[in-house]
Every structure is written in C-alpha cells, then in structure tokens.
Image (tube, helix red, strand yellow):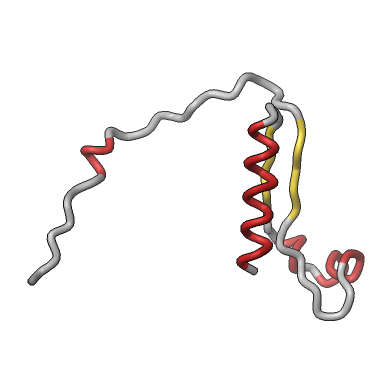
Length: 78
C-alpha cells in the first residue's frame, strides 16, 4: 500500500510539473464488486482512479492562513 501511494504521488507530481493537472480518487467504485471484477484478478485491490488532463482555467493558489496563527513552539515536559 505504501508503494502504490508513493508511485501515485510521483505520478501526480510529474503530471503537475509538466503543466497538466491530475487527481487521484478512491471512492465507492474502488470497492464495488463489479468494478473490482472488471479490473482485478484474485485478491488484487484498486488503490484509486487517476484523472489527468489539461486545466480548464488557469490554476490559482488557495488562500492560506498566516503560519504564526496555526504554528507554535512545542516545549515537551522534562
């Protein structure tokens, strides 16, 4: 599972680095018996589905909070 997660993230990073967009979704279809029967053999499982393509509009960065409002120093007890 960790290997497929690492491979999936690398695929998405490469997709975005080349100017495309991508999404990895694991939803009900990944667990549905008929979908699994169409794609899997034996005990194989579906990690998710990838949707890759060109952006329909220019990508924008979402608003992010000021880090000082959400991060603080951690002082563990001695």
